[in-house]
Image: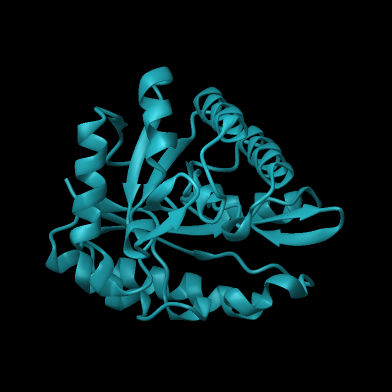
Length: 257
């Protein structure tokens, strides 16, 4: 069975291809189901405007998905958004949840002392703890079905340490409690390895994170997603790499929502 539930397109300003381009690629690879999950825009949130569609474009995004659903009945096409969770936007997120088939939590940003900070650039233990706190808070709402790249905090963080272990357990335990699927994100593999204090490794997926999960939380639900920003990446060699990694660890992989 082939599926993917983390898919972006040109409206997010950092991806290529239309909704239909991704659907055509899914049909070409005989996918069973695909979810379109571009970044959720927030009204009156200027810090996030540069990395996603505008608020006014969202009806066009939904219409593109609905048109594809009619045009390609042979493929199950789901409507979704990848969202950050900020409590002041809870009611808005609830409305989006009710318009979609599922939501993906991708907590790319946190507020630390009133300053927005990027999860791809965390280097301090305090940032990791805030990240975990916000992820847990989001999962407790029941709005999210998938937690994208839960280990994204390792992208720039210099080494796997006791704080990484602490927050990883918090995140995994919350996902289990709230029946949220944890994602192995193939896009991290596409970015390649880099040198860190603890050696040369991928920023994410973090082998340490997933080994911890395999050893201590084998019941946790895991999903492999492409997080593709180009139709050609929907089912590429990095998806195969992620599948092989999950198989090697004997993870509890969920293939379909």
